[in-house]
Amino acid sequence: MMRRDGNRSSCFVVLFTVVFLISVPLIANADIYMYIDENGVMHFTNTPTSSQRDYKVYIREKRMRSATFYSTDKYDELISDASERYGVDSQLVKAIIKAESDFNPHAVSKKGAMGLMQIMPENFQLLDIRDPFDPEENIMGGTRYFKYLYDRFDGKIALSLAAYNAGPTTVDNYNQTIPPYRETEQYVQRVLRYYRNFKKL
Image (cartoon, rainbow, N blue to C red):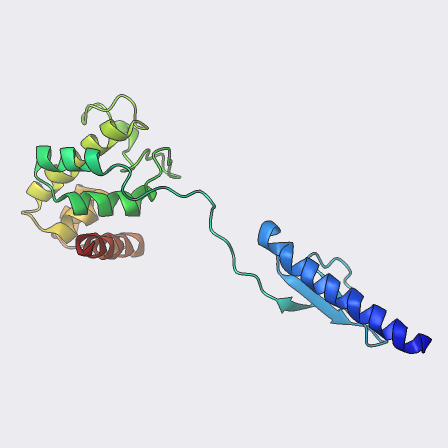
């Protein structure tokens, strides 16, 4: 009788441990590991530390993306104003912003590009940008720059996007074709995909 109660207690402890550990990684972003000892008892942890125990992944948690969410339509009015001023499709401007910063007005890249349309500091003066984190200034400046590239590359969207990412001189060096850089090729594809999606909305 005591043996049966002991088994029930063990089962309850195991069940409680599993439920608890499943809930923890949702916050901590960790996998759950398990090993079975010589007595057949299962042990669970999200931080295996002992090299003597053969822990194996029991539940692999999906990595959660940042909880920060930026609305895709928050800047529609500013985008529309820039679109009308420079003659660039508003949905294309929106697609560039989506690819560049995912609508985060305070985004800063590893290379130092800033704001919604990821403007490099050396272009601030040319594009009349005093505060790169001001959405209106950034969108106006970024749209103005894209319009310059669009005209320079004879209205070819893909080349203009490649130039926006890699620089117009780089595109010129490859005889006005998309430079064979993985980052640039993926960037162009990503923007065009967003562009198609926004146009369907």
